[in-house]
Length: 232
Image 1: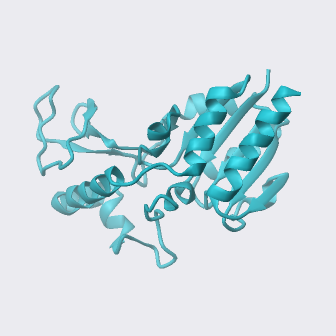
Image 2: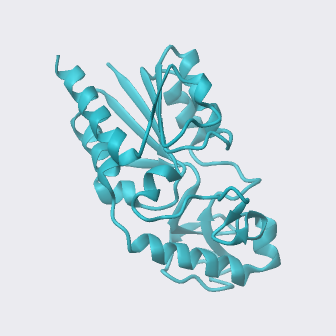
């Protein structure tokens, strides 16, 4: 059975109107990443961090999946083999398109207790000292993997990479590990590797094949290629 592992990054959601994670000047939505995407930043100024993710959550709720999200959901639904979608994105656009995904960097829709580790659905606006429904501690934070924290689902992701037939990275920068190393894991497993990106990523040389352009222009025809190949 053919097995496909797909990694998606900010580039696929950018065409739905969501800003990519980090600009070339190192800022994220005009904030230093150290201030809004680290445990230390949250400890220093929890009000800023909660407000930042409240804004991101609101904006994510206002956009819709694009043709690339819809095509991947179709592939997952119609492909006769296994299709695992892993995303670095914290929005729910894949799910809105009808796909099932692993969020390796967490989700805007989730809240996490910094005291006991309990998770629950995040309200649209989280407050400073958000109470944990499990332990009662005023320690609620966005369930986002910040710098210095371990991404989620890594054991399952590496297990699936070790036996995949195809690995495809879509809209990723190739700058952030461990995701930047997924292509080498897949290559070691004998998989065909393909990068679909607006421009060549820093990991592009590790891929057997690369196509450059917008995700909405590249992903739907690639999905149709894969479905046609499966029907032969």
